[in-house]
Length: 164
Image (cartoon, rainbow, N blue to C red; front, side, top):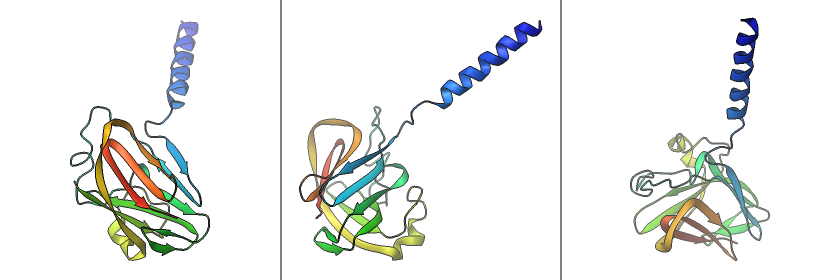
């Protein structure tokens, strides 16, 4: 009987250890471009309606999952044509159907955008980006930094803002 109980105790402990080592559903990924690096939690669409439902229009969004997205400028640059000092900032967005507002904020290490109203006085720059439709659904939120712009694609939405 003791061997039987020991076997099940070991089995339970092993299965707990294995499940604890699963990759997160929204892993933290990094996109890099010239002078700019963006670190964000990458959620998946998973048959959900993203913009207007999961991510409401007109409300501040962390631009990803989990911790707020962070953008680092290696040297002084610009965001949406506005000057930005070298450093790391939280990057938020306010999605709308036709245009997004991107926001750089100097308060780092935010969990989501839950305390945005408390830190919005630390906004450094805002920029607008027009929405266009992707050629097909994009399963995972994808942020890229090709030459002189930051591009966000998810579901059937494509938005970009100039960065240098």
